Amino acid sequence: MTFVKRARAPSMADSRPMRESPALVESRRFGTRRVPLLRPLGWLAAGWRDFVRCPLPGLLHGLALALFGAALFWMARNHFWLLAGAFSGFLLVAPILATGLYAVSRELQRHGRARLADALAVWRPRDGRLVVFGLLLAFAGTGWVMTSAALITGFAPAPVGNPVEFLRVVVLAEQGHLFEIWMALGAVLAAPVFASSVVAIPLLLDREIGVLAAVFTSWRVVMDNPVAMAVWAALIIALTLLGMATVMAGLVVVVPWLAHASWHAYRDLVDTSGLVQRP
Image (cartoon, rainbow, N blue to C red):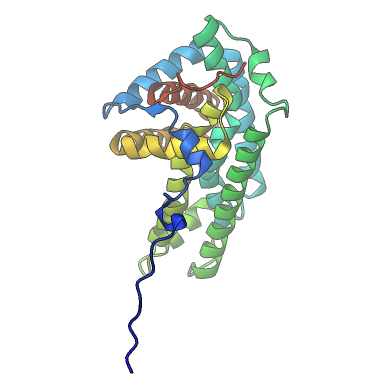
């Protein structure tokens, strides 16, 4: 006896389109823009103008981060295996630390003037969305610091206690590929964090939108402008390393410069005309 398997008739559930994430739908309510390859240089120019117009908030932010970096270096000066991950992890959490300076650029754009109070007001814990995003970046930064420390202490052929030993034992090692692996793992973590935050934090500050929708918007921006955003990421890394190389003193200027420039990147890349503006 043979059995013939009868084809199942499609049900109403099968014919319904798959529901998209509400956050994805929300992020599609407005558009993103494509920009030329060298447009990031224009963001730096605009960011410098904002810094010069209202320098006090930027200098205070930059000084605070420079002092933090110097204190971190002093405390971990004999444990460079930890310091290397901490300084590179700084790049992951820096966007949330510059939120007050985004507010300064916004006030300059809206009213032509800004005050220190505009930057400080952002740090009042009224907006849970920014708190959530800050925690996510902090977890990512902590994860990289722990991964970096475990990789260097576990696989370096000799102890790494200072920058010279890191250069000799890890970067210039004749055998193995520890430095290449360390760099690759850092890139694997940093790339999605950069793509998730490049415009998300200014967007959360400026408009009424959910955290996940802001992240999706940031990813859309990167996918629409992959080369220009790669140039922007390279400029951020280069200027930050330059600031650190000057015994942290350069961060006093580099931090506010990049923060103001990031605001202009957001305004250039995202069409927010369909979103409610935050006060």
